Length: 250
Image (tube, rainbow, N blue to C red):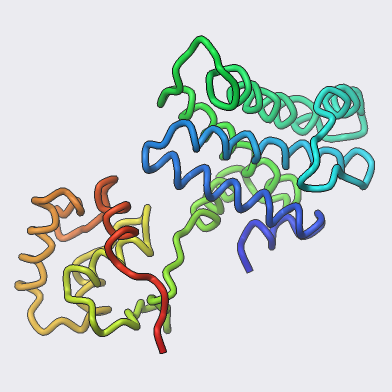
């Protein structure tokens, strides 16, 4: 079960799944530097946040796929003093602002400001804060722990990689050492991976030779590899997605 589905289990499951999907797509597009698509995903994410606020307000929500009554929801929720203040003020206002970035900053509709990284950075940080706050309210965990859960929510999953007993195993024997290393780093992103871990997961016969291959990946920019620690780069992520088939063949 995805951490978000688990932590927000008191909310309608289809709404949480939709929220999670847009949240993950927002992160993916932002990481790839696709500012306009990231803000479009951010807008859809914010619409689902409004639906969650509807649930908290009345127990019902506007069906997914139909237009929300943004102004009505905003006014009703902001005036409901029985709801937690962070929902009425911060979550509500941030979601409303994310929608403004989509609608009035040359994203969904023509505007006077070009789509840019600064706007997208605000949107993704606002979305992160909203998700962490929803988790905190639903589980009573600390803000720090709630923030840590976000990394699990956006974790990349690759069908050709399986975790067994804490170790990763590549299920495609056709991949060479460099591609396996990249796939493992993709699976763990944004967490770094040590040379020892890669050597263990790949059962490589010579750690020195593996180190040299990781250094080659560092030189061409697909990995950052230093002090025997590897991490995928912004160049490495799309390269993996474009050049390595993820689907498992049996």
